[in-house]
View 1 (cartoon, rainbow, N blue to C red):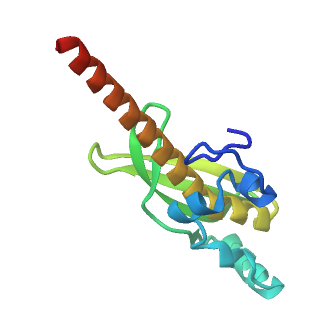
View 2 (cartoon, rainbow, N blue to C red; view 1 turned 60 degrees about the vertical axis):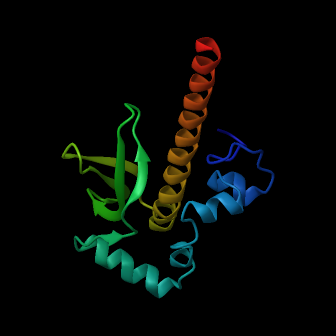
Length: 154
């Protein structure tokens, strides 16, 4: 969306807001900030995380983030960071409990753990905001359709 908020569509002017795709209010409403402190740890903690991941561990950054797929299916997403084939990956495990569908979404991949980790931290609020924006647009369209029908029935 460029310099517009993923959630409300308003113009963004602050560099930090532009980078995350949301203003501070929408970021907070979308669950942003919950894992931000995970990015400000010391070098020893980053080394500990690298060792854990490279031994086959994963770091979980939350479950039940809403995700709206291109086909309109709404998933609940659990975001994690792992190490696979020499690179760190931020990914989302997508679950549609109603249909029994499970998918995986690769969010970011690379050799810089801090960058990949930041992508994981931002992904939950970003996808939640995008899903909320889409929900609002659908609700707006439903209201317009109802008004149109009501006006044409009378």
